[in-house]
Image (cartoon, rainbow, N blue to C red; front, side):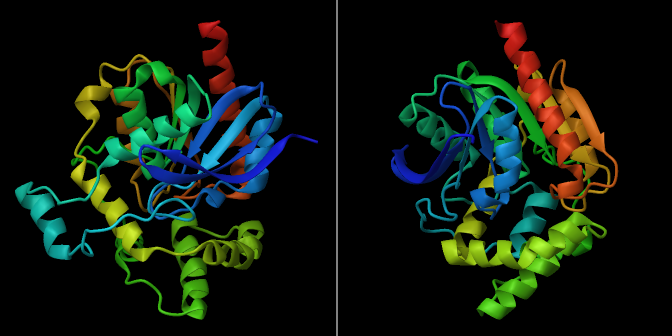
Length: 304
């Protein structure tokens, strides 16, 4: 059986971060960074185990303002007016913290765990955080895998109307409403029918709900993304082995976001997954896990 450490709390960068580890303590460390409003358990347990079985010490964690990590304060609910000002007048959104602070959380967690450098895998906002770690703390990153993410380039086409509505919807008021919203949200984000995932949605919703919701925190995370601007120019100078994975039908972060990321990073590899939306559906795990593991192993072999 693969080693597994249950969730624990680390004090890092001045906040509490909840993390969990799968795999051999001596294996190459791999940090999984989740996206906007998504708890670490959105990196499915079995997904983590399968990655660990490929020879990695897999560390997942709750970003600040989500799950069991510290909840911050400040920042009002984002208004459509602010988004319009950002889009058309380039007036930045105010934010209590930015992606660089979340990057420092990641590095702080690595410090606590005694991890000098790791393979970073980020999904959506997690990809943005991973890019920021690679840019600001390159010595800590062995390889980077950026999934369904973007450079922050304002020229990337916006989300579909349906996906934007999911993002901007007011928080559910009851448990029942939350469960309905969870199913509805993933239906929009997955694009198409994925019966295996749909069968697990009620249990996933229950587990997320039990770990605790923080709607205000999700709002602050969204502000952090919008206030952090574009990384595109800085990415041109990055030397870290990079793999970019993106779905061809992603409704939230347009496929151009992935293409732009790969085009911006010297030597980056791009894997477009046919029929994948803004999610990691179970039928696509073998392709995704193979790509992540192969990329990290290749980077490790080159560095040896």
